[in-house]
Amino acid sequence: MQIDKRSNKFSRRTLIAAAGGGAIAAGLSSNLLIPSRTIAAAPVSGEKISADKALKLLMEGNQRYSSYKLLHPRQDEKRLIEVAKGQNPFAIILTCADSRVCPEIIFDQGLGDLFVVRVAGNVVNDMILGSIEYAAGHLGALLIMVLGHERCGAVAAAVEGAQVPAHISSLVKAIQPAVETIKGKAGDSLDNAIRANVQMVVAQMKTSEPLAGMVKTKNLQIVGGRYDLDKGAVEIIT
Ligand SMILES: [Zn+2]
Image (tube, rainbow, N blue to C red; front, side, top):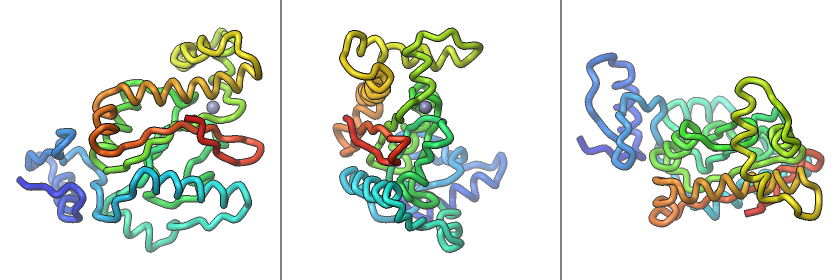
């Protein structure tokens, strides 16, 4: 079965397959071998947005947000109907679960624009990498931004070496290698660690397949940023 993975035809087929229970065609997406029945929202055809353009769109949106000139684009009924047929996000954002760091708001974007993965401390594990690989490999987004933020509680816990209960320790453990790299450095240890953690996660992605291959062959870009809670501004740090 030939599948144009960015066509509405594929989207429709996928939706039909998803609704069809056991009678599923064994359609596979070409590059990640994801059975089509598992894809709840297929990509739609649309303008392929380069990583450079995607970063420009994000930073322009953040400029609007931080200067209180929000446009709230693509959040109306028309957009709702449009993206119900499929999705074509132009950027992937991995950021903290902190309630103050909401990508669609701080980048002034709309429904279906951003593929967002959030976890305290914006770290990665296999499941998070899987989500990002899906968005990059199947939905076609060409920019990944790892976004840390000022006064991140998860990073603070790692810096302080705090004894934390239950599963919170797995977050601290994931951040700890970044904390090790900033020991003895001048400046604010928490902010140094926040930046080092973003840089570590970007490096982890750049050496993780298949993302590493996509960086080389598909012009995928992976950047790191820091969100300023006081000013609302995002700064690119790597
Ligand atoms: Zn945080």
